[in-house]
Amino acid sequence: MADVIEVEEALEEFQKGRYEDLDAGAAAKAKDEYRDYDAEARPTVKEFYRLNHTYQTYDFVQRKKEQYLSLNRRTMGIWEAMEFLNNLVDDSDPDTDLTQIEHLMQTAEAIRADGHPRWFILTGLIHDLGKILCLWDEPQWAVVGDTFPVGCAYSDKVVFSEFFALNPDSQVSEYQTPTGIYEPACGLGSVHLSWGHDEYLYQVVKDHMPEESLYMIRYHSFYAAHREGAYQNLMDDRDQEMFSWVRKFNPYDLYSKTPERPDVAALRPYYEELIAEYFPATLRW
Image (cartoon, rainbow, N blue to C red):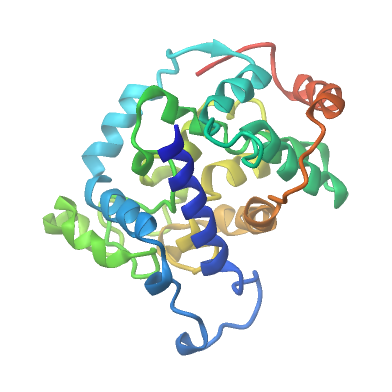
């Protein structure tokens, strides 16, 4: 799994650099005031987005939804899913690489320390569980990275948007208008985003978490919208309201990882109680 971890770490480093100055509500800077993070991205990141933007077509997204959203892969509880996700740990250096559970707990503990509601803390704990798709042999470009709508014109606010020229959908005229196959202001619930861990986990937990949490889970990788202001023409009033919660969550997602390891054994009883408050003993995945 070392190659999986390498891609994950490269993407995290890139996202932190690209979005660190874009605080929600801050006055926009001139383009030349930002560092050119795209130019500085590691080759791993550029190759990831070349693949992602080439192969995440509208038809691909539909196939993945058909493949996974029947939720018939496995039955397990939230904590069991966290332990399952731990298989993504890079075994070549266990003394320095955080386990997936430790990373999830760091996010949740940062949220908890700031006094947010219990559902918000739980969102931090579970938000990346959809990455178990990697354990079912999905390539990284179909699991992680910034998401974007398919079936309509690509925004230049999407990272490495130049690679969309390689996507077959770029030659489909119906898909290359501002709204494409969608109605204006239809709401993001009617829009198909590129396939990944966000949508997958949303579908697994949608009957159990508050709406604010579900927006955080479903759209936390949709940076073009919640940090760059793109695709406003597809959003409805509820999306606009709920995206304030996505923006509240984003700093915890990007900046909670620290070298200090959480004490998983000591924290586990608290989080198991929190999980049981919102979820049944098992879920379909």
